[in-house]
Amino acid sequence: MHEGLVKFVEKIVRLEHASSPNKPIYLVGDSFGGCLALAVAARNPEIDLVLILANPGQIPDTIVICSPKFLKIF
Image (cartoon, rainbow, N blue to C red):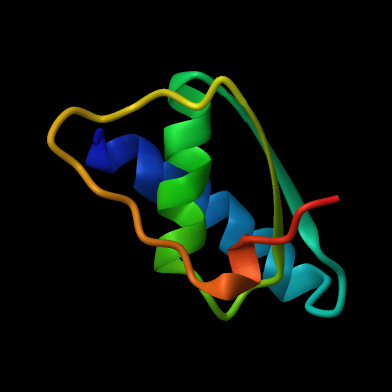
């Protein structure tokens, strides 16, 4: 994964969380953006993130493990 992109999105998510800690943050990702959103969510379990993923890309030779917090189906 492109570490620089993950850190960039994390910085924005953390700033938004600091300004509104009681509101969920929505991340929308298509293809590679889906992988990026998952990576940010996995690295920041203390932040209430809602992920909307469309055709999330797959990173070769990588297994993504999500906590039950991220497995809500609507």
